[in-house]
Image (tube, rainbow, N blue to C red):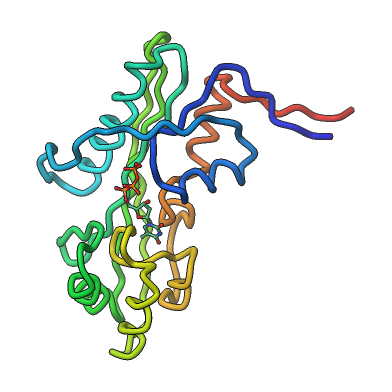
Length: 201
Ligand SMILES: Cc1cn([C@H]2C[C@H](O)[C@@H](COP(=O)(O)OP(=O)(O)OP(=O)(O)O)O2)c(=O)[nH]c1=O
């Protein structure tokens, strides 16, 4: 059978079930140790830089405690007309976000960091995906909010969930919208020999 060989310990420094699912789907074995880094302590800069700083801080926090392991951290935000949308705190806020996104193209930025302290290696980048929403009716917005899906998601929607009906098209990485650009992360792990592809002869 073709398998993935994994050498050192790999840690996902995230509480996000979506990020865990994406890495599992890619065949990786890893521990989940969420970072307690206070995201509010970072000043908002330009979106691309902001998510990269947060991803580095989350990964760095856990890498300090597990210096021999490779650690992955990430952060996702939604940006529309220069406004950053994080996770909504209330039904009203979720409604406001969805009304802003309705019928428009917005950007999803995910910053990621992959590091190993003992080896002094760190890779950090951010990736942008354009997402076009369909025009939403008030009834659709109300229905979607009542599913409760918007509440732990940047921009108040989940492209991978019931929110799939909101999205007309995307330009760029799909997994980046869900919360982790898997292609880029696997590329780093292969290059750094954290994982290897094992072929059956
Ligand atoms: C836009 C969008 C976001 N999201 C999610 C991904 C992230 O989990 C969340 C953004 O919040 P983040 O602050 O990036 O991550 P998190 O708090 O869930 O986890 P941690 O900080 O521990 O890594 O929004 C979706 O699941 N689907 C989507 O379509």
